[in-house]
Amino acid sequence: MEFISCIIPTKFRTNDLKETILSILDQGYGTMEVIVLDSNSDAKISTEIASFINSIENKIKVIHLTESFKSPSHSRNKGIEMSTGDYIALLDDDILLEPNFFVAAIRWIREKKVDGINGVNLYDKDSIVSKLFYRGSFKDIRARKDSGGKTTRYLSTNCAVVKKAVFKEFLFDEAYLGYSYAEDIDFSFRASKKYKFLICDEAKLIHKASLSGRKPNKVYSYMKLYGTLYFYFKNIYPEEKLIFLLRLLPLGLSTKSIPFLFRCYAEFFKLLNENNPSRRAMEYYNKFSSQ
Image 1 (cartoon, rainbow, N blue to C red):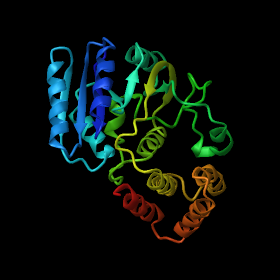
Image 2: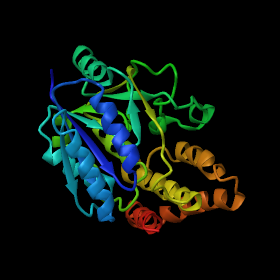
Image 3: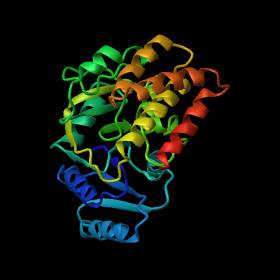
């Protein structure tokens, strides 16, 4: 069996993390390691995590690294650097894997001759919004019910399995600080220009989307705005301006606030006049992510 390294950043989600690791253990996949990147500032939490890991050390190899990681991007890059597997499983600390997740993922990668797969979150809803407003480079099929077997340019860091060789050329962007938004689509969008990824509908999981450690809704809305602007100006600009304006509409309406909708478009046009719009967008993003 191919050796898999599971990379799991964690912060303020002790019970969720335990359940995630137990769901990995229940896979019965023998050749693997789990690397937990622990950013908890509370030593008691880290001690509790360490105690749990010690209780299962005879069943699965778990590496527990405690450090002041700047962001999940930083954590994942560190975990990838430490990993010894041929495949990297990118997982969040609040997911539950369905049976045979890894078996299906590796089989698809080998049989379909691709470089990675994105699993299917059973809690995802097939949104009409994404079909209507996510066009061009923003087309995102991860939540669509008919996406199984289709090529995707986007991977999710809660359910992706990727050949380690991909990470020799592409890593997560560490410009993101604090709580990260869209670092996974930034990574996979860049990597998909050279490597092929599929949606694997046989690799299933539940993403609980735990509320622990999440930002308040208002702060998170601004992070989504500036994270989306950063992604566009970094990876796509100056192409697809009209498509991006369409993409901003559901984002602007998501808060049900007309002033926020106007703010989305005002920030876009303001950044057009910047010498380095992606850098400025990231400065705004990190201002909110640090709150």
